Length: 173
Image (cartoon, rainbow, N blue to C red; front, side, top):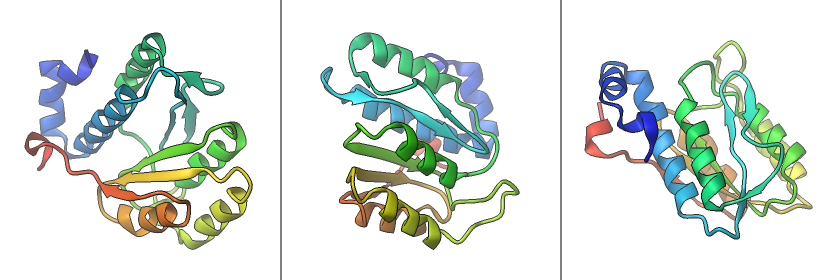
């Protein structure tokens, strides 16, 4: 059902690659969130690393067809680049204003294009400014060093909650 997530060769590669464990955990979490959406819910996926890529140009209904297509998109995500949280936040507010809830997954501290950690307080201020009229609820899920430092206040300031992703025992290194 989850394509490459169950491919034994790919899982072996994941076991040998500690950086890939993060993307596997994120994929499993994202697939679970989408699978739990009712068919009347609308959603989109914005994947980010050194750049941002939207799965669709706008929100789509969470029917079987779209959920299956979303799982294929998720399956193709690979670990590469930086944690450019700023790009993802900008894209969310630029392109998904009809949404009412955002699930924000991150594996670490926000970084710039050189991989250097950035001061996330200006980013939190920007979100507060951008979110004053659409009032999106931002639910945050994170793992990795530094994720909670940014995601806890992001969720708290936007009517959401933060949850630490704890993977299944076989994903822990």
